[in-house]
Length: 274
Figure 1: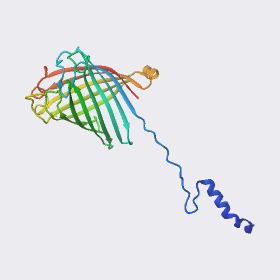
Figure 2 (figure 1 turned 30 degrees about the vertical axis):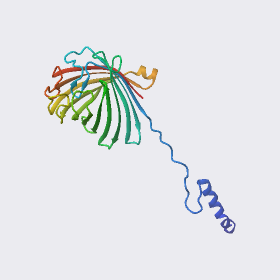
Figure 3 (figure 1 turned 135 degrees about the vertical axis):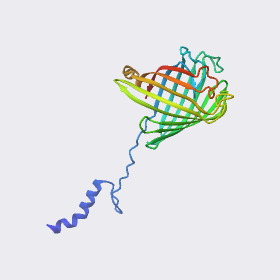
Figure 4 (figure 1 turned 90 degrees about the vertical axis):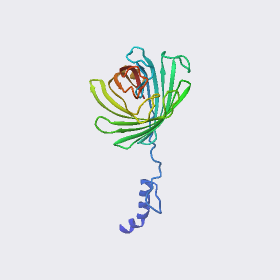
């Protein structure tokens, strides 16, 4: 019996290896199939918001002051492209539409902002850089921001805002550092956030001639977001109604052109993400 099976062993072993995979007679079994392709989804967020004031780093752009009834329309659109699991690219635009001034762009379109940015998630902190162009007043203000968002209680963040070209701002180029934090919680289906921020100006005249350096403004508010499930099923995406109230205290020696040092900004709108 042994003499009958032994001569066949090499052929039996070869056959079993051939059925197990690609057999390489000079080495072990090799899996030559390509790795599975991991598709990374592009994120899209679109919002249709109305604001009582247009606030740009503490500056009350349209001088609304204590008048909270003349709302502007501020739609925005952003795309997020994941490059790796930790690195993403963003492209976006934001518009200011109102009747508070004569538009050099046309109609009630007062400003168009565009930006592109990169964000890298390091685990305990997400680091980002964003280049922006703010187009208004027949000129373009150019911005380069650096952001640091920490994965810690109260979600602390630091934004280093650098104006590279003053455009039609009426101020000078320079830097503003904003330190922020927020607390979030749910009340049933409603998501509540309580953001706060403090800004320090490193450049004289950032918001106009005679402006000082140092503390520029502090803000605190409450924002609420309510899911709109009926919109999800009808149009796709994740829809929500958003509303908020933010109080600003500004230093008129830094934000020199504000009509009021203290004022309240209200907003509401609808947003969707895909």
